[in-house]
Image (cartoon, rainbow, N blue to C red; front, top):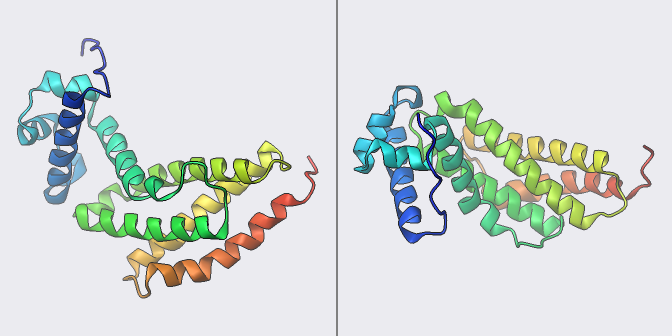
Length: 198
């Protein structure tokens, strides 16, 4: 494929075309397995040509990654204030937002199981990056290794609990789940204030 100049992401036409591609991709994911979807399926559904698709994404895997990141931003990142610190309130918001993300992903993607590992890896990575930012703002005494370890631990824990909550039929409201989970998380986070022994 010849190299293509990336479109200006702030151009309203580019934004509209990307949204059209995302919407078409979501429609296809709701009716087909990801592995069966072709670029031709996407371009036909979006009523664009292949060159337009390739101007935005090099392949369907890049589209999937961008699609998942976009969904995570819409459902999770926008609920956390830009300069937020890692507080119990922020953790409550994060747990509830992850519950909403899982619920939304499950409804949108009929072939959810075939994408589960890709989705899981994508969410955990984005969640880890977010938690690292929150921890870094909240704690200036812990070393980077401790912050990175805590970010990984928290992201996997929050993802795992909210994933299980969704998979087992959402037996309690997200706020109740957050109410049980946050005290467990908060205890571990408070130990980061201890002197670093590295």
